[in-house]
Amino acid sequence: LVNFVQAKMHIMTILRTLFAVLIVSLSLNAQSQTWKSVDNPPSYDWNDPDSWDQGTVPPDTGNVVIDNTHTINVTTAVTCKKLTMDGDASNTFLNVSSSGSITMAGNFSIEARGNSSSAEVTNNGTINVGNRFQLDNKNDDDFTVTLNGTGKIIAANQFRLKSNAANMVCIANT
Image (cartoon, rainbow, N blue to C red; front, top):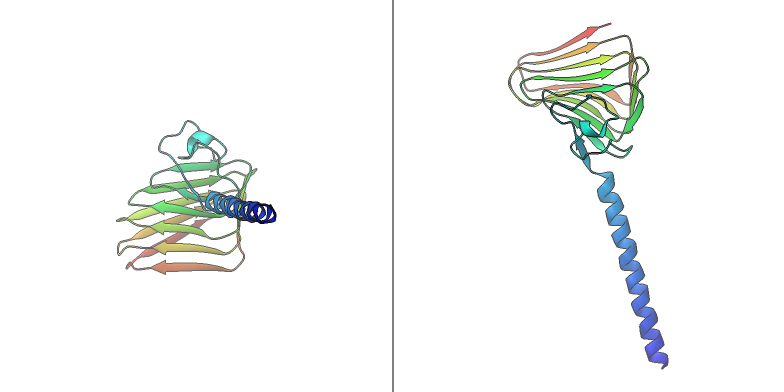
C-alpha cells in the first residue's frame, strides 16, 4: 500500500510539472506572435481587429508588422513589443494623430525589401521606442523614408541607418 501511494504521488508530481511546462510554453508562444496589417481594412485603425491578420488588436507583447502598401492609423495610446514597417517596392504608411502614441519595448524598424521602396511616417503624437529606431535597406536599390508631422520620436538606445544601396534618402518635414 505504501508503494502504491508513493507511486501515485510521484505520478502526480510529474503531471503537475508537465502541466506547468505546457502553460509556460503556451505563454511564451503567445508573446512572440506577429500581427500583420491586412490589405484594405474597413478603417485602417490600429484598434480595429479587422485591420490585422489575427482578427484581434495586437497585444502589448505582440510583434507588429505594417505590411507593404498598407496604412495604419493610430488615434489613441497603443503598445506593442516591436514594430516593423515592411516596404517592398511601394509606399507603406503609419499615421499617428495628435491624440495618439505608440510605445514599444523593442525596436521600431522601417525596412526596404524591394526595388525603389518607400515608407512614410506622419507623426503628430509620440512614438516611444524602447530600444532602437532603425532604417534598414535590405536590398541594393533606392530607399526613401519620409518623416512628417510635429510629434516626437524618442529612441532609448540609438537611431541607426543601415543600407546596402547607393541611395538612402530620409526626409524630415516638421
